[in-house]
Image (cartoon, rainbow, N blue to C red; front, side):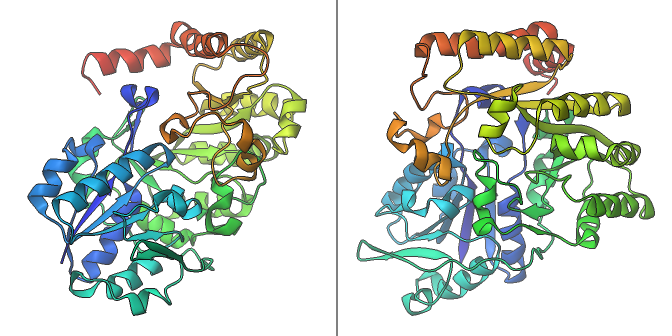
Length: 438
């Protein structure tokens, strides 16, 4: 049995610059499972290996094709499955990933056999048993939680099991080791990524992550996290949890474990502003063990907006968090949301606020209700596009309330233009990119 694992992408405005290029971690976890079963497989991710899907599919001629991708890659996944079935009607096609977990019906295509809509690796392990000898044993699929499958063009959706513990094996990073020189986070080269938790305990209205695992937040054992970090042979490690700094006890345990094991790495992670403000002592400690950057959801500069997002923070927290990070020499990348009800003055105020705080690294996202969230259901009638590739936070998917689309885009992208002119950090990234140093 031969399995081709593919990370699917869709070119967006953001991806043309590719400030961030990461390893396909979810496929590397599956690779570990396949290694244990001694199943022949290979990973394909054109952002890293530069390989063409159609050429590689024809060359490798897999018995099973596993496709994964974010919401922007839905059409790519569907087109890859169409091509694969056209070339080999016997190939079995399985789709998974974060979008498929919540929105599995988006992949109910005649050319897709199974959609995985459950977190964790247990369903993959059981699926492989049902796919023995490259054929599907539908009697086994019937009782397998966490999947949807079709028989004679009729889709059957099984129940989803909640992960009760986040015990993951170490991912097989053979693919990463071959292409690590292609990975980056802005100016940080050769960046590995790790996950230490799943879902999120907070209730931010716009967040898709908190819907994963049916909203049940789980964390890995510190010992397992340390073991994985020890096996990563790069200087930079990006902890890609939606929010890594949540529990001060866990954060302190992580700091002590890094010290105890003599680990020398540079870390990037996400944090909430309230954690930074309430625990400046921990911020100092994580700086001492190698944290170089925190990605922080500022979201907005007004309390009324923050309350509407159910963020649980306020303007004062934002100001104090920025100050704490500056005092400890940790770079801040601030995240903001441009609401569809923004007026020109809202964009101007945000720009002036960013300037006043001397923030030189930030992203602004257009307010985008993600399918699968409560927010999407609330705004469903107002969403004007069915093109999932536009759900990249850089396109309007709803009509602006107070201005034309053109004026909104001009105001929105002026924030990025302003960043280029003001930020030596961003200009250095662009120059390195254009002159081939990245």
